[in-house]
Length: 270
Length: 326
Image (cartoon, rainbow over all chains, first blue to last red; front, top):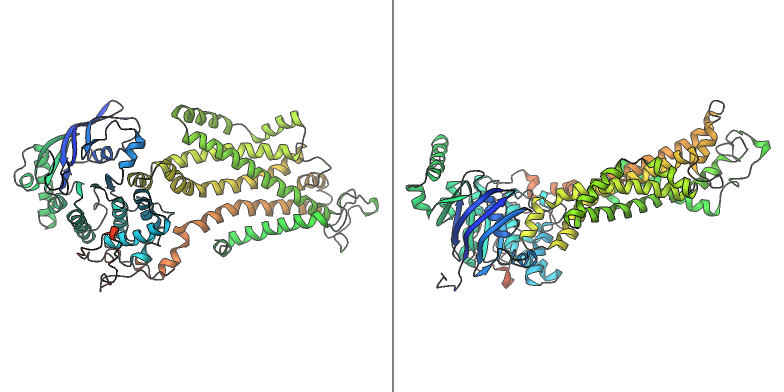
């Protein structure tokens, strides 16, 4: 089904199944990220959340057997040769990782790491890419971007590193962004600001986002609809509101109860 | 980088000793105090004097001159073994990491077997076939260290290839060649540097050892190993004489071993940019949570338009501007 405003189909995942060494890690997973919308993926540890994001990027571990369909605005990605698949990484779908401390090469200045995908996807030369990197760093809310891009990753704070990772992921102006627990490693203040950034980017640029999280507060904040994974299967798929208010599946209910219990203990909002 | 290298005591020591070695080797090409091979039967076991700085040996040869002439051999062995080890190491690492799965597995098994093959045995085999020479020392030490380098590098490359930053780079669209040149090679280089420096240090030791056993340089070549072998037979009578080549070997080996570590440390931004960070970088202020500015809501900062909104995003009270100016 094509989106009327954009004329794009969205990121459609149909019957996605991943087997690693005979074990089924993802089983018949089906969901769609419409253009410009934010979809959450929740589930307990080991439910297949991260495998879903890696499979979308075509970065599943070697030896993983992948069947089903992943359509990127109509283009089938499953079964594509890796060379062709690589062309969609960063420009079709970008990805932000959980741990900004390790997702940046410790030996390269962050500016070079942001400029790299800019050169690849926009065909910019070194100088133009450096200029574009400063603009991009500014767009993701980094202070004094020109000076900051000359730093090495260890010289930045966790929040700044994650902004750099987001800049890297957005460099190819991808239509969709997969964010795998992007705020889990951050403190709450920084988390709120990074979530604001994701909201702003998706609103301004119409980037469809898939938010993998185990944190229901984050989910409620960022996503419109959500997919609940349990043991590699989609057990529930609904608007975030109804998932939180009236969970249908025991796995969803367990996640919601656990979140409520934590909230009561810490006195925070459910 | 040179300045950072010299700023470390170990780096400074290594650089000074090795520079001196190379300079002395160059000098020995044109000048030595005496002819290093001229035996003077009237000057046996002369004590150190202005004419014979380090004294003379059993044949009345000037030890200082012989030692000086031997620096060339030492440099040749260290550099030669380093080159052989690098070539062998890089080629085997490339085969073991970049080819198809079966070749990789096969190389891994082969490396495990080769690593267990003693350097000395290689040297003896080569000597049996080609006769003892410096070339045998260079090739045998180079080969065995090349194998060691490849074996260690293989694990390192696998670790790096699975690291988050390589996966993140691939996710942003960087291809295999980009990953190799921009992430794998630079991140494996420190390990390679350390191993290479150890290989060169071992080569100098091995030359001394092999020459001592008669598998190294011929007696017509001035080498520290030959000198040590000659002098140690008299060590009970003239203990000081053997000290000179011994000390020279120890100094050079220590300098070579330390050089790798020092170079690695001097090129690691995590160790070398700490002082820059302390001048006002956000991380050094100890308030990592507060240095994220409240994200403004600019609407016109799309990088495609190239319009940076830096002026609007002036740091407010909670924002720490990185104090680094390049």
